[in-house]
Amino acid sequence: MKKILFLCALAALAAGCTTHVRIRTEPEGGVIRYRGEGRANFRWKYAYPTKTKTEFDTYYGRITTYATWPDGAESDKVTVPLSSFADPPEIVLVKPGHRPPPAK
Image (cartoon, rainbow, N blue to C red):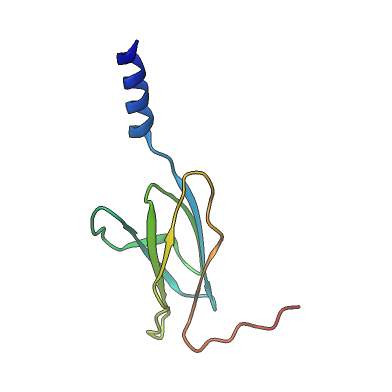
């Protein structure tokens, strides 16, 4: 009985859970990149679709993301902790010097 419970617990841990991440750039047109953080240095990946707005599922416990615009401007890098129990709010990457339009 203990062996069965152990195997069930091991299977649950091995399966993992995903977190749904939403990222957008302000203004539009920025290419979004991200990488996982934690136990190792993961490589930077392009978020697809790469421009303006994207949604994807990830297994990482924390990600760092930034955007680059065609003129070479780069947003600040944003690190977001992730949880299997709740999706984080939408991440907005802002171009340096950009002023968002006033709220309506």
